[in-house]
Image (cartoon, rainbow, N blue to C red; front, side, top):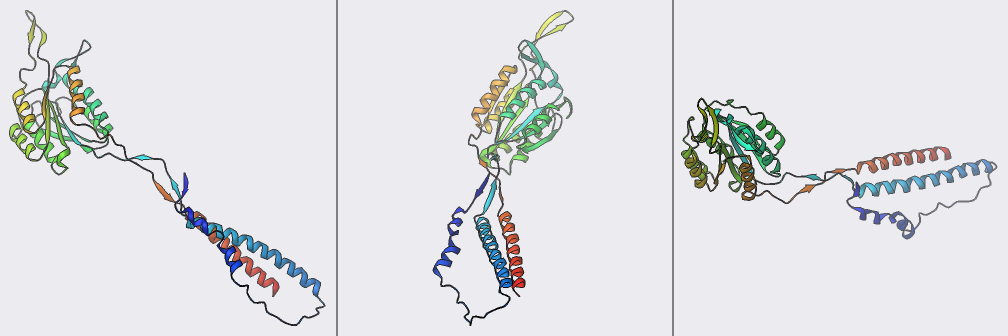
Length: 329
């Protein structure tokens, strides 16, 4: 919408009239009266002069209005725009090693791959984190920064959904993933550094020991939440019939729990999709989002419109004055 920043400038509108009323009139030049034989022609010129004066008065009034309008600072105020909120910096580290293809995550009677369940639930979690910057690390034998910290949650979700098992190798480098996350978080505000690490195994690769990486994270104020993924029991068909196995036998819960506790975080166990959803809902409570929305309205100056009109009318007024001078000469 169009607004005026200084509308009180229109209080000066009667200033020319007041000056005309209060200041003494200009002295008239006196002289003897002459009897002119061409008086009718002179009267016609005088009539044109009076009409020109009325035009000049109208143009001067319009110029004064335009000048006051420009001085009142007209502005175009746009629609409210949401500002990014100052929330947390959340880094998600997702295991994409070979074991993440195990189909033991049950939801509504159907089994899903572990990575598929992580993608679905974590995507909803990312989408809910309004005001937080979210980053993504994928790790297997190596750890890679897939998305730096950003407010563009849609891009992070897209990159997570495009992650493929084995893309970073078949083994698991938990320590390297934590070290990479600490490196990306260490220069940010200490109270907002959070790492959520999801894995289904133990550290079998990488250059950094997980507990050493956890100590570094604690020194840098990075809080780590660890999530152990995988069911406790699974029925598989064998040569001599079905048998029950523990598909999460390789999950190093002790290390994951120690990592979380040493950094002020918490360890969670996700045996199925429903448990994973509950974990992320609990994470929303443990690391609440900023609720206060901040907006601003973009403002564009429009004073140059009436100012341009004033310059145009002033040019017309000067042109009319020149025409009157030549007509009386």
